Image 1 (spheres, rainbow, N blue to C red):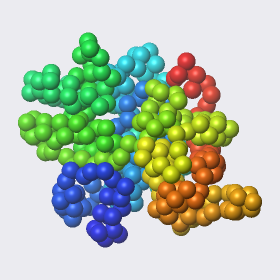
Image 2: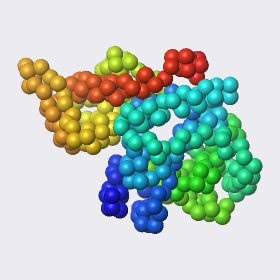
Image 3: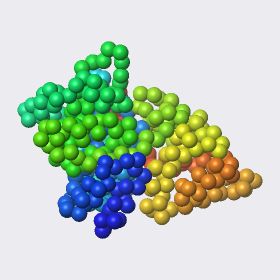
Image 4: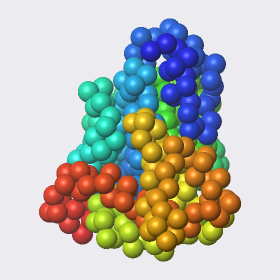
Length: 337
């Protein structure tokens, strides 16, 4: 695969890359660059995780080493009870690889890293203290404002969160950090802070945050906004039937956004079409090769929201079937009692 094809793969469906020039230079000068994404082990993962799983799959195809940080320490800093940390780590350690396998990713160049496996080291702790002396309370709170739960009387842990995420870039020995656009303030904080420590700034890659079922960000802490990765087909269909998907409206439409950023990416790579099944009396089945064609018909009110929802429910349930099988019921109950 040449550099232009790698750039196309890496940049598709991204919101922002800081900076594209640095990314191109990295591809030109390093045989196997490394990228990481961190996921704090807090609430139960939902289907929006497929957005970053697919993007990391693009990096795998482009020849990258991919590291997924299962951030148990970050989970504790963001209010996960300490006594549940290990079980939640085990839950994520089984579920995240299953998500990659569900989309057909080649997992041989994926490394799952437990945060506490290196974040309790002497070198890491020294760097954390040093960075704390270089960071104001204002800057730390601002960096974490879109990610860490905020309150009028915040705990000190929330201020440490962005500092640790910054240091992870160095201590994981990666060239790129990847996250959703809600991570931007932390990623830019990292760009500014690492040189103060004598470390090189990393490239930062961001993808859009897709709306949830109620028109807001899909969130583990808001049950109404999300479809859990272990939801049964009937639950998926029921939740989607109630989802925010007004006829002729694209903005804030989580159903269409998920189709664009997940289903059509998978279908496109497999050279398959997205099929909406309808009775003949309502015009018969519809097939779409591209999301743009579906969006055009939706805006023109040529396809009904419920037909789109039902088709998505079918595709999503197929995608989740191997994921559901990967997680024992006992572990679910222990991690999320």
